[in-house]
Image (cartoon, rainbow, N blue to C red):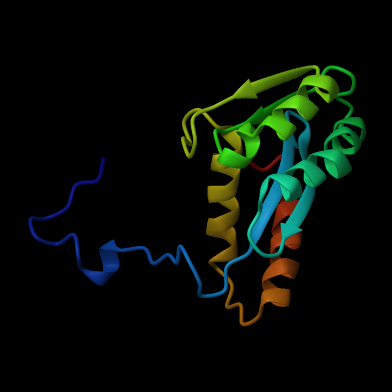
Length: 149
């Protein structure tokens, strides 16, 4: 809860700018565990079920192995439509020891949302002028997260 003087909510000092669509955004998929973060994957274009399935196939087990959580890792995901399509649920059924589903965009119940917010706050401190520079800063700041969140 935030306390402000009456009618001051739209003053510039009380606002945080954000851009939901356009304006130089970058979609990213990441992996985390109790030991840290791993496997930052950049997504170009709009992610569909096939792209999400490819990310799972290419990164999930390798990340679990590198983080030392194999064979008992858990796939924790929210209710994004791509996570719930039949081919992705079927793949997870045969390749993941356990799947935990969380409400979509709920930072209280989804730990990765807290890390995304933390990363977003770190990135906003830099003056970034290109998508390549954004990617470099994302990787740099992502690598600093382990043990600091």
